[in-house]
Image (cartoon, rainbow, N blue to C red; front, side, top):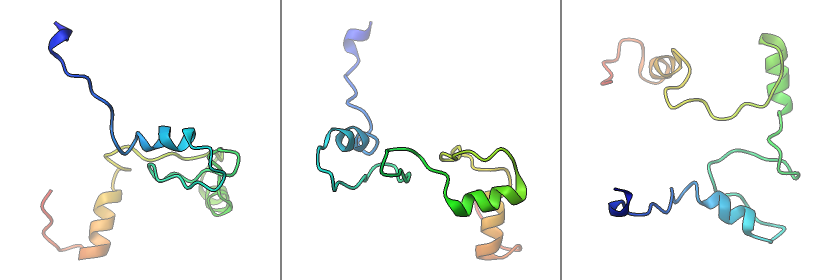
Length: 91
C-alpha cells in the first residue's frame, strides 16, 4: 500500500533549522521560523515579557508561537484597529 506514496522530503522552511544546527560557523544566523534563541540555544524570556507578565499573569515562562487560529479575539481586534470597527472584512 505505501509503495505508491512518494517520499516527502519535508518542509523547506522548517528544514532550514536542520541546516542551521549542522552549520559549524560560529557567526551563523538562524533563518528558520523566526524564534529568537540566546547564545546557548535556549528560548529566553525577554525582560519586556517578564515585566508585562508580572503585571498580568503567573507563572512566567517562555512563549512559543501561538496556534494558527491565534488567541480568541486577537485577529478581530487587529482588524478593528487597522480598518476601523465598521469595516466589512471578508472572513
